Length: 302
Image 1 (cartoon, rainbow, N blue to C red):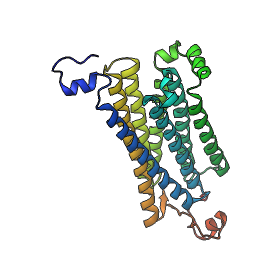
Image 2 (tube, rainbow, N blue to C red):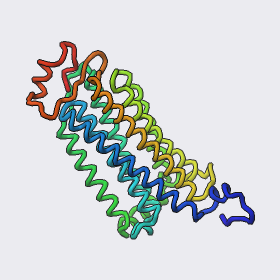
Image 3 (tube, rainbow, N blue to C red):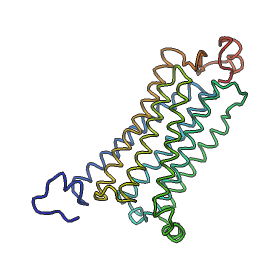
Image 4 (tube, rainbow, N blue to C red):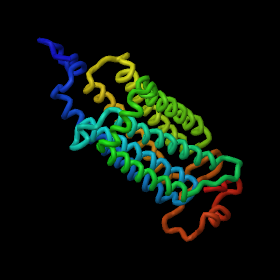
Protein backbone atom coordinates (compact mmCIF):
# COMPACT_ATOMS: atom_id res chain seq x y z
CA UNK A 1 0.00 0.00 0.00
CA UNK A 2 1.23 3.53 -0.85
CA UNK A 3 1.01 5.91 2.14
CA UNK A 4 -1.53 8.68 1.70
CA UNK A 5 -0.95 12.33 2.60
CA UNK A 6 -1.33 13.06 6.31
CA UNK A 7 -1.82 9.34 6.96
CA UNK A 8 -2.19 8.40 10.62
CA UNK A 9 1.26 7.14 11.81
CA UNK A 10 -0.30 4.06 13.40
CA UNK A 11 -2.17 3.15 10.21
CA UNK A 12 1.00 3.77 8.22
CA UNK A 13 2.88 1.36 10.46
CA UNK A 14 0.15 -1.30 10.11
CA UNK A 15 -0.69 -1.01 6.44
CA UNK A 16 2.46 0.17 4.64
CA UNK A 17 5.43 -2.06 3.79
CA UNK A 18 9.01 -0.85 4.25
CA UNK A 19 8.16 1.58 7.02
CA UNK A 20 11.56 2.70 8.41
CA UNK A 21 10.44 1.80 11.94
CA UNK A 22 10.29 -1.90 11.11
CA UNK A 23 14.02 -2.52 10.68
CA UNK A 24 15.24 -1.50 14.17
CA UNK A 25 12.18 -2.98 15.90
CA UNK A 26 12.49 -6.30 14.06
CA UNK A 27 16.19 -6.59 14.87
CA UNK A 28 15.52 -5.75 18.52
CA UNK A 29 12.80 -8.41 18.78
CA UNK A 30 15.09 -10.99 17.15
CA UNK A 31 17.86 -10.21 19.63
CA UNK A 32 15.48 -10.44 22.60
CA UNK A 33 14.14 -13.84 21.47
CA UNK A 34 17.69 -15.18 20.97
CA UNK A 35 18.78 -13.99 24.43
CA UNK A 36 15.72 -15.57 26.07
CA UNK A 37 16.32 -18.84 24.23
CA UNK A 38 20.01 -18.97 25.22
CA UNK A 39 19.18 -18.36 28.89
CA UNK A 40 16.49 -21.05 28.76
CA UNK A 41 18.92 -23.53 27.18
CA UNK A 42 21.46 -22.77 29.91
CA UNK A 43 18.93 -23.52 32.66
CA UNK A 44 17.76 -26.69 30.90
CA UNK A 45 21.36 -27.92 30.63
CA UNK A 46 21.90 -27.29 34.36
CA UNK A 47 18.77 -29.31 35.13
CA UNK A 48 19.99 -32.15 32.91
CA UNK A 49 23.29 -32.21 34.80
CA UNK A 50 21.44 -32.59 38.08
CA UNK A 51 18.99 -35.28 37.01
CA UNK A 52 21.42 -37.16 34.78
CA UNK A 53 20.05 -40.28 33.09
CA UNK A 54 17.01 -40.54 35.34
CA UNK A 55 13.55 -40.52 33.82
CA UNK A 56 13.02 -36.86 34.63
CA UNK A 57 16.47 -36.13 33.20
CA UNK A 58 15.49 -37.83 29.95
CA UNK A 59 12.26 -35.80 29.82
CA UNK A 60 14.25 -32.60 30.28
CA UNK A 61 16.57 -33.74 27.46
CA UNK A 62 13.55 -33.85 25.15
CA UNK A 63 12.64 -30.33 26.26
CA UNK A 64 16.20 -29.27 25.45
CA UNK A 65 16.03 -30.74 21.96
CA UNK A 66 12.61 -29.21 21.29
CA UNK A 67 13.87 -25.77 22.38
CA UNK A 68 16.91 -26.11 20.10
CA UNK A 69 14.60 -26.92 17.17
CA UNK A 70 12.50 -23.84 17.97
CA UNK A 71 15.72 -21.86 17.92
CA UNK A 72 16.48 -23.24 14.47
CA UNK A 73 13.06 -22.05 13.32
CA UNK A 74 13.78 -18.55 14.62
CA UNK A 75 17.08 -18.64 12.73
CA UNK A 76 15.20 -19.48 9.52
CA UNK A 77 12.99 -16.43 10.00
CA UNK A 78 15.95 -14.19 10.77
CA UNK A 79 17.84 -15.35 7.67
CA UNK A 80 14.85 -15.26 5.33
CA UNK A 81 12.74 -12.35 6.57
CA UNK A 82 15.80 -10.13 7.08
CA UNK A 83 17.17 -11.15 3.64
CA UNK A 84 20.55 -12.24 4.94
CA UNK A 85 23.01 -13.07 2.13
CA UNK A 86 21.77 -15.88 -0.15
CA UNK A 87 18.57 -16.27 1.89
CA UNK A 88 17.23 -13.06 0.33
CA UNK A 89 16.02 -15.05 -2.68
CA UNK A 90 14.45 -17.98 -0.85
CA UNK A 91 10.93 -18.71 -2.08
CA UNK A 92 7.97 -18.64 0.30
CA UNK A 93 7.18 -22.29 -0.33
CA UNK A 94 10.73 -23.24 0.69
CA UNK A 95 10.52 -21.27 3.93
CA UNK A 96 7.07 -22.68 4.65
CA UNK A 97 8.16 -26.29 4.11
CA UNK A 98 11.40 -25.85 6.05
CA UNK A 99 10.08 -24.30 9.22
CA UNK A 100 6.97 -26.43 9.39
CA UNK A 101 9.02 -29.62 9.04
CA UNK A 102 11.03 -28.53 12.06
CA UNK A 103 7.91 -27.40 13.91
CA UNK A 104 6.21 -30.80 13.54
CA UNK A 105 9.39 -32.40 14.87
CA UNK A 106 9.49 -30.01 17.84
CA UNK A 107 5.88 -30.84 18.74
CA UNK A 108 6.71 -34.56 18.69
CA UNK A 109 9.60 -33.86 21.07
CA UNK A 110 7.33 -31.98 23.47
CA UNK A 111 4.98 -34.97 23.43
CA UNK A 112 7.87 -37.35 24.14
CA UNK A 113 8.88 -35.17 27.08
CA UNK A 114 5.39 -35.26 28.52
CA UNK A 115 5.00 -38.98 27.88
CA UNK A 116 8.32 -39.62 29.62
CA UNK A 117 7.22 -37.64 32.67
CA UNK A 118 4.02 -39.68 32.95
CA UNK A 119 6.15 -42.80 33.46
CA UNK A 120 7.10 -41.39 36.86
CA UNK A 121 3.56 -41.93 38.09
CA UNK A 122 2.60 -44.82 35.85
CA UNK A 123 1.97 -48.32 37.13
CA UNK A 124 3.49 -49.74 33.96
CA UNK A 125 7.01 -51.10 33.77
CA UNK A 126 8.05 -49.20 30.67
CA UNK A 127 11.31 -47.32 31.02
CA UNK A 128 12.64 -44.36 29.08
CA UNK A 129 15.83 -44.59 27.09
CA UNK A 130 18.60 -42.04 27.59
CA UNK A 131 20.24 -43.35 24.41
CA UNK A 132 17.09 -42.63 22.37
CA UNK A 133 16.92 -39.10 23.78
CA UNK A 134 20.57 -38.54 22.88
CA UNK A 135 20.03 -39.90 19.35
CA UNK A 136 17.10 -37.54 18.82
CA UNK A 137 19.25 -34.63 19.99
CA UNK A 138 21.93 -35.49 17.42
CA UNK A 139 19.28 -36.06 14.74
CA UNK A 140 17.68 -32.69 15.54
CA UNK A 141 20.99 -30.88 15.12
CA UNK A 142 21.70 -32.62 11.80
CA UNK A 143 18.15 -32.11 10.52
CA UNK A 144 18.08 -28.41 11.48
CA UNK A 145 21.50 -27.71 9.95
CA UNK A 146 20.63 -29.60 6.76
CA UNK A 147 17.33 -27.80 6.26
CA UNK A 148 18.80 -24.36 6.91
CA UNK A 149 21.82 -24.98 4.66
CA UNK A 150 19.71 -26.36 1.80
CA UNK A 151 17.14 -23.55 1.72
CA UNK A 152 19.03 -21.26 -0.73
CA UNK A 153 19.92 -24.14 -3.09
CA UNK A 154 18.11 -23.63 -6.40
CA UNK A 155 17.33 -27.30 -6.98
CA UNK A 156 15.72 -27.59 -3.54
CA UNK A 157 13.61 -24.48 -4.10
CA UNK A 158 12.55 -25.67 -7.56
CA UNK A 159 11.58 -29.07 -6.17
CA UNK A 160 9.19 -27.55 -3.61
CA UNK A 161 7.88 -25.04 -6.14
CA UNK A 162 7.15 -27.75 -8.73
CA UNK A 163 5.67 -30.35 -6.40
CA UNK A 164 3.97 -28.41 -3.62
CA UNK A 165 3.41 -24.73 -4.38
CA UNK A 166 0.25 -25.16 -6.46
CA UNK A 167 -1.28 -27.93 -4.37
CA UNK A 168 -4.39 -27.49 -2.26
CA UNK A 169 -2.38 -28.49 0.82
CA UNK A 170 -0.28 -25.34 0.45
CA UNK A 171 -2.81 -22.87 -0.96
CA UNK A 172 -5.53 -23.65 1.58
CA UNK A 173 -3.12 -23.45 4.51
CA UNK A 174 -2.86 -27.05 5.63
CA UNK A 175 0.70 -26.45 6.77
CA UNK A 176 -0.68 -24.07 9.38
CA UNK A 177 -3.86 -26.04 10.09
CA UNK A 178 -1.90 -29.24 10.79
CA UNK A 179 0.57 -27.39 13.00
CA UNK A 180 -2.26 -25.59 14.84
CA UNK A 181 -4.09 -28.85 15.56
CA UNK A 182 -0.94 -30.64 16.75
CA UNK A 183 0.12 -27.73 18.97
CA UNK A 184 -3.31 -27.44 20.59
CA UNK A 185 -3.48 -31.19 21.24
CA UNK A 186 -0.03 -31.33 22.85
CA UNK A 187 -0.67 -28.15 24.86
CA UNK A 188 -3.87 -29.68 26.25
CA UNK A 189 -2.08 -32.99 26.87
CA UNK A 190 0.67 -31.33 28.92
CA UNK A 191 -1.83 -29.16 30.77
CA UNK A 192 -3.82 -32.26 31.76
CA UNK A 193 -0.87 -34.41 32.88
CA UNK A 194 0.49 -31.60 35.04
CA UNK A 195 -2.22 -32.49 37.59
CA UNK A 196 -0.41 -35.76 38.29
CA UNK A 197 2.54 -33.90 39.76
CA UNK A 198 2.76 -31.82 42.91
CA UNK A 199 6.13 -30.16 42.52
CA UNK A 200 6.55 -29.70 38.79
CA UNK A 201 2.96 -28.92 37.80
CA UNK A 202 3.83 -25.23 37.39
CA UNK A 203 6.80 -26.05 35.21
CA UNK A 204 4.74 -28.31 32.92
CA UNK A 205 1.94 -25.75 32.83
CA UNK A 206 4.30 -23.05 31.56
CA UNK A 207 5.53 -25.32 28.77
CA UNK A 208 1.90 -25.98 27.82
CA UNK A 209 1.29 -22.22 27.62
CA UNK A 210 4.38 -21.83 25.42
CA UNK A 211 3.04 -24.45 23.01
CA UNK A 212 -0.35 -22.72 23.04
CA UNK A 213 1.41 -19.51 21.99
CA UNK A 214 3.10 -21.42 19.17
CA UNK A 215 -0.37 -22.44 18.04
CA UNK A 216 -1.39 -18.77 18.02
CA UNK A 217 1.47 -18.00 15.59
CA UNK A 218 0.01 -20.49 13.11
CA UNK A 219 -3.47 -19.10 13.65
CA UNK A 220 -2.19 -15.59 12.93
CA UNK A 221 -0.43 -16.70 9.73
CA UNK A 222 -3.52 -18.59 8.64
CA UNK A 223 -5.83 -15.61 9.13
CA UNK A 224 -3.37 -13.05 7.83
CA UNK A 225 -1.26 -14.61 5.07
CA UNK A 226 -3.35 -17.52 3.79
CA UNK A 227 -7.03 -16.63 4.19
CA UNK A 228 -6.63 -12.82 4.27
CA UNK A 229 -9.22 -12.50 7.01
CA UNK A 230 -6.95 -9.94 8.68
CA UNK A 231 -5.42 -7.65 6.06
CA UNK A 232 -2.23 -5.83 7.05
CA UNK A 233 1.11 -5.22 5.37
CA UNK A 234 3.57 -8.11 5.08
CA UNK A 235 6.00 -6.26 7.32
CA UNK A 236 3.40 -5.76 10.04
CA UNK A 237 2.36 -9.40 9.77
CA UNK A 238 5.94 -10.49 10.40
CA UNK A 239 6.21 -7.93 13.21
CA UNK A 240 3.27 -9.59 15.02
CA UNK A 241 4.89 -13.01 14.57
CA UNK A 242 8.12 -11.73 16.12
CA UNK A 243 6.16 -10.41 19.10
CA UNK A 244 4.38 -13.76 19.59
CA UNK A 245 7.70 -15.62 19.65
CA UNK A 246 8.92 -13.57 22.65
CA UNK A 247 6.45 -15.01 25.23
CA UNK A 248 7.06 -18.51 23.82
CA UNK A 249 10.65 -18.36 25.01
CA UNK A 250 9.64 -16.46 28.17
CA UNK A 251 7.36 -19.30 29.29
CA UNK A 252 9.95 -21.95 28.43
CA UNK A 253 12.42 -19.93 30.48
CA UNK A 254 10.07 -19.47 33.45
CA UNK A 255 9.20 -23.18 33.42
CA UNK A 256 12.82 -24.10 34.11
CA UNK A 257 13.31 -21.24 36.54
CA UNK A 258 10.48 -22.85 38.53
CA UNK A 259 12.15 -26.26 38.26
CA UNK A 260 15.47 -24.80 39.43
CA UNK A 261 13.81 -23.16 42.43
CA UNK A 262 12.02 -26.36 43.39
CA UNK A 263 15.09 -28.55 43.18
CA UNK A 264 17.15 -26.07 45.20
CA UNK A 265 14.60 -25.81 48.01
CA UNK A 266 12.98 -29.25 48.20
CA UNK A 267 12.68 -32.48 46.20
CA UNK A 268 10.26 -32.44 43.30
CA UNK A 269 7.20 -34.57 43.93
CA UNK A 270 4.98 -36.65 41.71
CA UNK A 271 1.79 -37.44 43.61
CA UNK A 272 3.06 -38.54 47.03
CA UNK A 273 6.40 -39.82 45.74
CA UNK A 274 9.64 -37.91 45.92
CA UNK A 275 11.80 -37.41 42.84
CA UNK A 276 15.21 -36.38 44.10
CA UNK A 277 17.84 -35.09 41.62
CA UNK A 278 21.05 -37.12 41.66
CA UNK A 279 24.06 -35.17 42.98
CA UNK A 280 26.86 -34.62 40.48
CA UNK A 281 29.43 -36.29 42.72
CA UNK A 282 27.30 -39.25 43.74
CA UNK A 283 28.90 -42.69 43.69
CA UNK A 284 25.58 -44.49 43.89
CA UNK A 285 23.86 -46.03 40.93
CA UNK A 286 20.25 -45.25 40.18
CA UNK A 287 19.28 -48.68 41.49
CA UNK A 288 21.10 -48.09 44.80
CA UNK A 289 19.34 -44.76 45.24
CA UNK A 290 16.02 -46.36 44.55
CA UNK A 291 16.53 -49.06 47.17
CA UNK A 292 18.17 -47.08 49.94
CA UNK A 293 17.15 -43.43 49.86
CA UNK A 294 13.60 -43.33 48.55
CA UNK A 295 10.49 -44.05 50.60
CA UNK A 296 8.80 -47.39 50.09
CA UNK A 297 5.99 -45.89 48.05
CA UNK A 298 8.25 -43.75 45.86
CA UNK A 299 8.41 -43.82 42.11
CA UNK A 300 10.70 -46.67 41.11
CA UNK A 301 11.83 -45.36 37.77
CA UNK A 302 13.90 -42.23 38.18
